[in-house]
Length: 358
Image 1 (cartoon, rainbow, N blue to C red):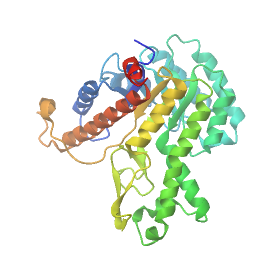
Image 2 (image 1 turned 120 degrees about the vertical axis):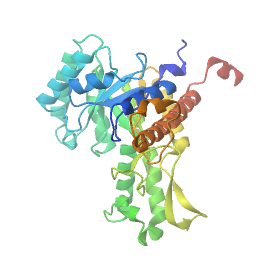
Image 3 (image 1 turned 45 degrees about the vertical axis):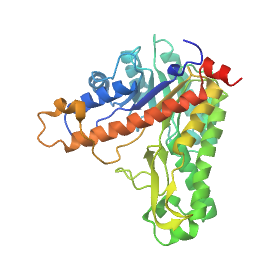
């Protein structure tokens, strides 16, 4: 394969059973992920949980990334022991492990840097060891997040996970708060009368999100380390999430509003397909295909979809509602995976396409 083969970029989706039901839902996910050629990002708190989930991986060649519990803290010795246990047990089976950053990283950076160096030394001893990715999740200043990785630029097994939804929403909140005496832009999602008065400022704040993501990408890319991305759209006014967050949306939705603005009763999301393409193509330009991996971290959005060719999996179910909701979510992931692959294709055209444009 040539160095500009789009298949070199690892693409994954959120592989979880977030809808109630038995493991036929995992089998359905296994089938739909396999159809899409999509790798799986699985959540696991223990090696035993991951062992079970890996029974449903969508294919031996499809990459797997494991998202560890959010309370895992790099500066805690027990967390590092747990990471090493996962790394040793699943070396060669999974590409990466993901943990969240923590607010303390900004004030105790030396502790976190020291822990990363110590852990990396142990990870280096493991053949085919997965990479540990520390995800932007705690709302740090993006520059503080980047500075941490600058301090560990020489470590081979510890790198960054850029969550474009988290960075974008955090930036939008900060930009809006500076202009409105600390007010939280996400509090406007109830769409009371004040929203009409500040809608222009909301749009300005939302537009700042992707800019911040690209700036963070530029800073991290200078380190020439593998970078994992969590991709999802968002908007401070979004009420789509059943978990109450403003992001984890697909890239083809709009945000309905209860009044007309610029001739429409809906707002674009923070990224949309054009914003997704801009992030992906810039990442490829800066880092190339082999240092990149992307997970579509999109949550269920409601809705149902007939099971079609997977109906036999659920013959023992008398009520197919949850199965059809799962199938709808998987179709959403498949569609967004198609958009992601198209964005990668734009960012990394084939040699034939390059020659046609000379």
